[in-house]
Length: 300
Image 1 (cartoon, rainbow, N blue to C red):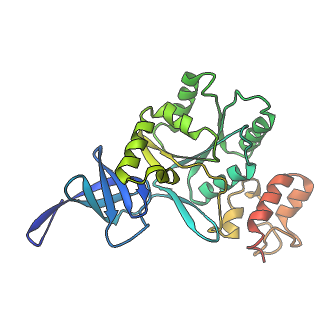
Image 2: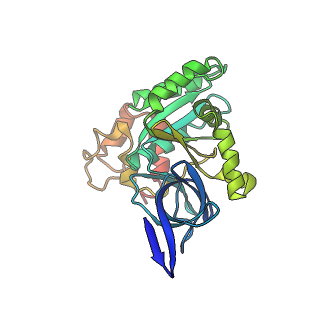
Image 3: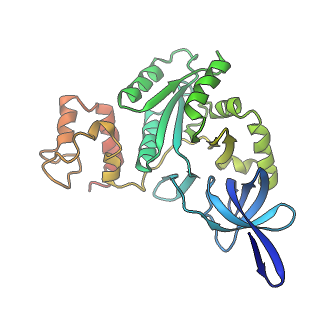
C-alpha cells in the first residue's frame, strides 16, 4: 500500500512486532527488521502484535495502527500491568528442581493462561539434577489435574530433548515463562541456535544495552514462534475477578454452580460445595490455600 500526502509517497506495510522498549519497537516485515516508533501514542505495542507501519529511510518506520489481537497474556499487580505477548496460542511454563522453584508461580501462570483462553504446557527442565523428588511429584500433580506436562534434560541428551520439544512446540506460537534460573535460555538456544546473535542485534538496534533483558522477544520457529521472556519471581493476577479465578481450577469445574448461594466466594459460606470438597479431601489443602490467597481481597 502506498499513501500520498504533501506531495510525498509513503509505503505502508504489515509487520510483526518482535521486540519493544518504551516507544521504540523492532518490527519484522518479510524478514527485514525495522526500528519503529508508535505514532502519537506510547506503550500500547506488544511483542507479537501485527501492525501497519509506514516506511521511512534507513530501516525506520512509524507504527500507524495495531491489528485486533487473537490473544494477550499479561501479569498485573496493584501498581502496574506488564504485557508479555500478543497473538500466542500456548504458554510454556518452565520450572526445575534447582534453583528452588515456587509451585505458586507455576499455578499463577496456569491461571493467567486459562483466563485468557490460551493452552498451557508445564515443562520440568533439568531432570538430571539430584534431589529432584519434589519437582517430580509436582509435575505429577499438575498432570493429574489435567494439564499437559513434559520432562527433559538438555544436559543428558540434547537431541532427545529437542525431539520432545519439537513435538510439543512446532506449529504453535509459544510463550516461555519461568522464574530466573530455570533454563529458558538454554531451551531457546537449543531450538533457535541463532537466538543469542539475534538478541544482540535487537539490543544494538534499540540502543538500550542490557535494559532490553526486561522485555519479551519473538523468534520465528518453523511455522510458529518462540517468545522469550525475562525471568521474574512473581506472576501478579490482580486483573482477574473471583469468578475468573475459580473457573481456572480444574478440580472446581464439576462443583461450580452447586453451592447454596449464587454469589458464593468458596471461603467460609455455608453450603459451599468447594469448601466441602476440600474438607473431604478431594481438593488438596495446598491448592485450596492457593485459591484462598488469590481471592482473599476479592471476597471481602
